[in-house]
Length: 222
Image (cartoon, rainbow, N blue to C red; front, side, top):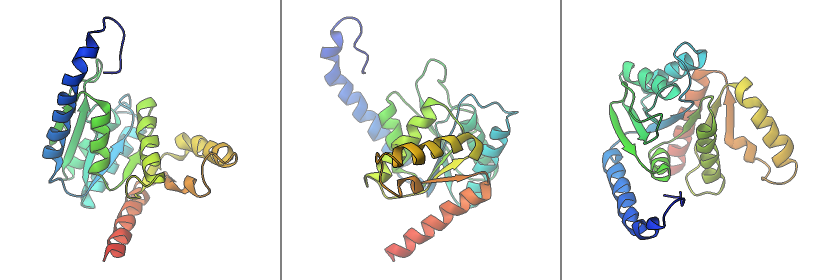
């Protein structure tokens, strides 16, 4: 939609794109409206099955399912596949929200409930709207995009504050240190904003953070 190279036909096509965007929102809302309490798991599509991160993400998916959560991923290969696989094999609901890309066009085999989107921003709305927490496994630009979108929405109060868990202290530790030593030190973020991120190497701890946060939230509402 944002690619303006080539002829100016896009000027006349944009109003019709609005209808397609609307249809994606309607389809996504309709499909996910009755999804139970869920956690969105992000990570690299390039994570291989023999990678320790793949195994850890598979354990995460299973642990979340056993704790009563549906697992939402981007539906692709790598870490996404691992989380879906772990959730499905543990008897939980495994959800995949795919995206049309030249190199990642079909949902993995471990998705129970799936949908493919054309527009990233529609897909990201679904990740946020139907999740009570995010777990961020090691990943690249796409994973970073999803991470900082979530942090920004929580920081600005656009969504209810929920846990954002970074799995892998060695992988994410440098980023968190930079956030504290540069962003916070120079006043680019507020004191305490770094505490929106929870860093861990323990799957059980990650799940417990989510469970405790949900219980606390339920207690505040009571």
